[in-house]
Amino acid sequence: MPTGTSVHVSARVNAFSYAIRNIVAEARKVEAAGRKVQYLNIGDPVQFGFRTPPHLIEAVERAMRDGQNGYVPSAGIEQARTAVAGEYTRRGMSVTPDRVVITQGTSEGIELALSVLVDPGDEVLIPTPNYPLYTALLSKLGARAVSYRTDPDRGWQPDLDDIRGRITARTRALVVIDPNNPTGAVYPEATRRALIDLADTAGLTILADEVYGDVSFDGATPLLGSLAPDAPILSFSSLSKAYLAPGWRTGWLVVGRSPRLDEVLSGIRKMADGRLCSAGPMQYAVAPALDGDRSHQRAFADALRERAEVTSRRLNAMPGMHCVTPRAAFYAMPQLDLPAGRRDEDYILGLLRATGILCVYGAGFGMPPEGGYFRIVFLASPAELEAIFDDMAAYTAEFLRS
Image 1 (cartoon, helix red, strand yellow):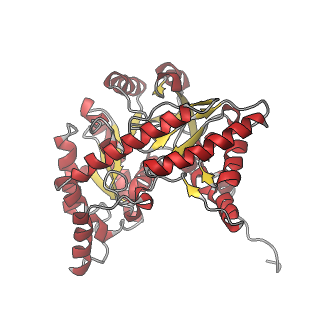
Image 2 (cartoon, rainbow, N blue to C red):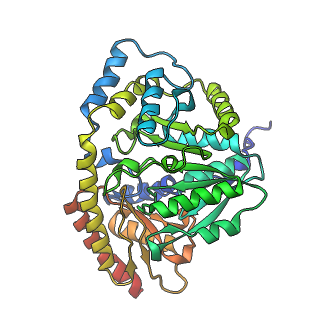
Image 3 (cartoon, rainbow, N blue to C red):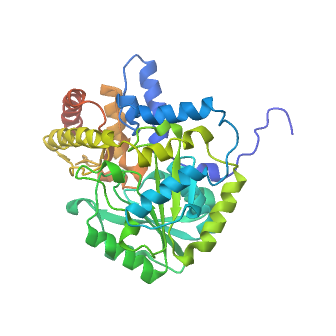
């Protein structure tokens, strides 16, 4: 190769985008210019003062001190898989430990599942606004993400007719994110049953992203699989959000008991073998988390409810701004009535440069750029949020006048 010639880079890189992280490059420029940045782009509770429960930290420390620092089984240690299976069985989705795989966070579980379910050219139905991990992974796999609508006028509920109209012979799976990221929506039981029936009729596997199930403001959201234990459902969750340990990257993938999923389970376990295992010491916190003290979750959910109320109240008070009040998690997806010819990214980058407030523009979640949507993380304290929204209100008024 001639000196100075660039090394070839795969074409898949150009198709891979993850706006939640990519926009940080702009924030770094703002910081370099001397302005403090309020990072409201990534949902990491620890960065906002919430603390991992001590008994989970102690479990990991004990495992490390006891020498549990080598490779572990690729599907995960037995006590972690048993704890997950027990949790799911208690909550109405009866499974055995051999149908559980401990993963490097929920993200790896989703990637393992999609790698087994789709071939190049296949399609997967994902909600819009979407969580960009799905579009990025499907792009990497050469498959196609097909967006289905969720309706902000109905609390961001899925549009069932829109889903039906998008199913083709190449559709392999339906992604259901409930409670939802990025909208904070929680689906009623009737909607959840309708999604299961729709997928069953079309012969689709459901990928149930349930990582926020224990931080619903009105109590834990039932597992989707509890409504139909024999349906072909794969469920994903982790210690990241409800157990306040996102940096541990410890999650799980649960394959429903349906025999229709046996080959999928075999494929997932085979793929898991190829990456050796997820981090070993952190797996020793799974059983204490699921079988031990969870009192922190109620306090966490109550704190999030207060922040959600501040967020929706302040956003809806801004002229031209509309926000559905979240019912779970720590995200809101407001909409600004953009002036003609402006895009969501114009508002978000202007807001960042003028105030240091970093959110993520709606196009990064599959929304139309002219729609004026953006996602905000509301994990900051209520007092901090009030100050943030003061600055946002002032900038928004100026933006709409320009």
